[in-house]
Length: 202
Length: 266
Image (tube, rainbow over all chains, first blue to last red; front, side, top):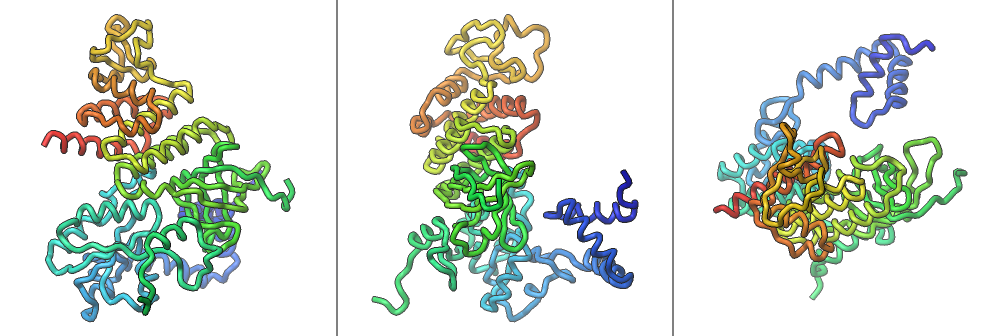
């Protein structure tokens, strides 16, 4: 049975190497590229090469950057004494969207996942410890995901930084705008456990 | 099964999961009724009256699954979390041990091959782990490993020689061969027996006690820290022999045990 021509097969194989892309999706993406105009394929290829060439890790916080320090770390108006620790650069974007965080970040580039072989050595913890040792950090806010691995990662960081700097963890429980009837049991249990005095009450 | 089939409801443990598209997740579940299975839960990450709470590692829940004939990815139509064993997140030793339990189930079972004993053992172990003191984690984990190995037909022989059945004296140090199925006595050692692991009498007593203990009793079996390193080596080798590869979580359990041993020496 005839297969795809070699150049198409190569394109499919390259898409399939990406996380979350199976063979069917890779085929769909490859055919989408073929359907487009030649100049669109060129723009797509240039974007790939350009991103790979120009995007690097921030020397301070490991976030994505286009120079030695990322936009946040090089922003003099940000409070360098506050460091929000997150797992991934995508989390930085999520917090930045709120417009409420005026501190800086530290991107771990992963989390503890023993069953996937990922330990503390895979995280940017030494850089975080170096920032704390620098003496300018007043508070570390642990913003890892509120799931099993995220909590374990937060615990490991808390242990490492214990006694060196105040460490806090993000609040958790019900999401604003959500409905209680659709909240999972774990979320409701957390919301009950971490309840606080009502605003303006008492 | 027709598209309108509501599916089958079963207790299930989450062994692995990953986000899929904007609001969905794919997971490896160990179900009590049908064994291990890959599932898709569409829209589980957004408010949904049928899928209450996203999948999380080592979470126990009740899943309604629409089994797709001839497909390796089945559809979860309803999900209720029973417990996420929150205590597992409060101590790294518990967390590492829980990852070990889920990895053993993930790597040691074929898809859609039900094993209710292994399922119940895992649930019982996770429940014990979430309240285990750091010193009790090795016993709870060893109990799980030994019972899981027994269920798989690979229980290491610890009472006597696995080759000639000669009883091993209680206070004797022994040598264990994962390939030969347990203790190998001096008479049966022969010229060269590869992969022999020496185990002191205290380590062997610990393994026997963990094997025979209830989950609750295992919580009260703190081990001499120095023995735990050797005990873990025996269990890891036995699991590796069955799985034909080292589990990824093994080094994390060893790190904790080595740390505990060096703390005990200080």
